[in-house]
Length: 385
Length: 180
Image 1: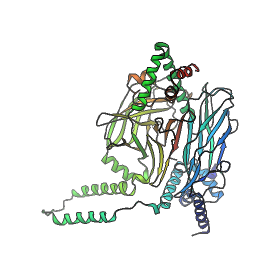
Image 2: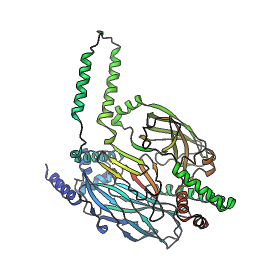
Image 3: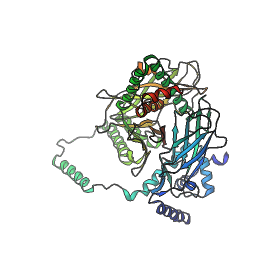
Image 4: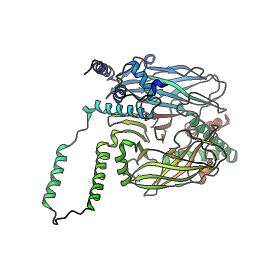
């Protein structure tokens, strides 16, 4: 063993010995908070909670449980924030993020952000902090955005904010038309949908890569190509032309969907929602097929979304489901000017997707507010917007 | 930058994945892998391999006796039922044999050499989301509120997210974990 390797082995053993018992983290030494220069947010305080570090195999497992209190130092009301947590960039599980949508934080006000993440960092541990917590983005009420946007949090938070406005408007309309009893009925229906929605567990892995050509060839022999059926949503700017995935029992791999731009605007990104049906006729949301990377899709042109991934589905406490059909629908479009299209609530209702899709973060927040504090609290909350 | 353009040697990437490079070499390779998907993937694979090696002591116990009994039973079965007809070789069978050999080899590679549990897997269940590196390291996004409110997960090609209502802050919180 070379001198360098011996030293590395010593460091590894020493760090492992130190960390084996789940040492509590010293916040000043282990976590560096860096929101970046000019950020419209300030860290008011940090509490480490039960954060700890443990050695497992050849890596450190960082259990991060801090609570931050941030202040909106911008001039606009804050609607959402995404923090990037980085233990090590290239390590699987070395990067995570925590996003808080559906905020309503006026300038000068503070709000808590609780982090519940486990990250991984290979041994030996560095001399400096183990984790860096930074700002990936902050979205304000006028849709202005600040942050490096490494995780495309601008698009994600803009879509959440649009869903929030759509769903609040819907609830306000119900309140205006049917009064408090109508609103109560609507929110109870939402709570029922949230608990009754059929769910699948899913494992995602790599489906194909050049060195694994034989595996891919064998999968191609064992599986069969299954076509997507597409739901047409009124007002959708893109039309799905065709889609296929390789299906074998409870596994689906290599989904590919081709769309054409029917709008008169250039498209930067789109996402296809993916539903799978089992042999008993039950239908589940399997995931989404996003366009790969930023597009530059002119009106009338076509593009494809595809993934070199395999999806293995399971229903808790049941035998593995056999996939018998697949449906797709356009779930999100980002135009070149960074505005976002999402399906209207009516469109989702018309194609019976409301019962299959998760409710928006805002509907989740409002229904929980009703559940814990009652109808009057919900009515007062809606009146704030 | 020209300095970062050249692909590093594989052994340097392996040392990098193990955190065994000096500061200068680490800086040079970090600069390169930040802009090179291929090398980034190699680093991730080296890291997985290294993690598995570190966990060899924790390999699951295999029932070797049962496996050996199974092999003996199949051999005995084959001896009891010998092929009754003597076949003569035909040239067209060559292609069939070759195809079967490819399928068997492929099955071997895909099912034995690369079982799914040895890869980086993203998982999502009602309880939360996780990244698994091999069998031994499970990184679950701990969700303290999962007992109280439903968790909505979302799966993408390189990340999974779990959304839940944090009971303490009253805020919707979305945890994301990335495969790389």
